[in-house]
Image (cartoon, rainbow, N blue to C red; front, side, top):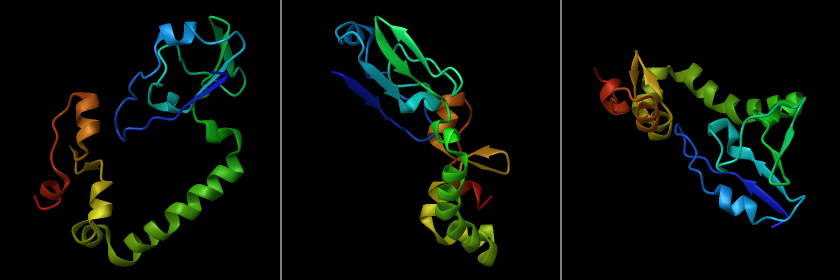
Length: 141
């Protein structure tokens, strides 16, 4: 391929390596890989984090672009987008209190990672090799 964009996300877990070194060797000289999953370890075996100041490197004559925190390249735009997405969620918590929102809204509960020192997101617990407590149990203890 001429361009490979890797965008794998398993919330709270490291991205699986879906593209092997052997696959990279079969790509044409000058092909480009953009590994958007680099913040979660990358989904390409040859990926390693880069920066906006030094964004690319070559492996087998294939250009790799693996900038960690890609939205940081457009900070104002990415901040406004994040604020637009999160503000309604925060207003609900502010208006109702976090305990009520967590106990009444399964979507908020599903996004809970840590509660009173207990890891309530299974993938995070597994990735860090720590004890997992289901969120619904943690908020009732």
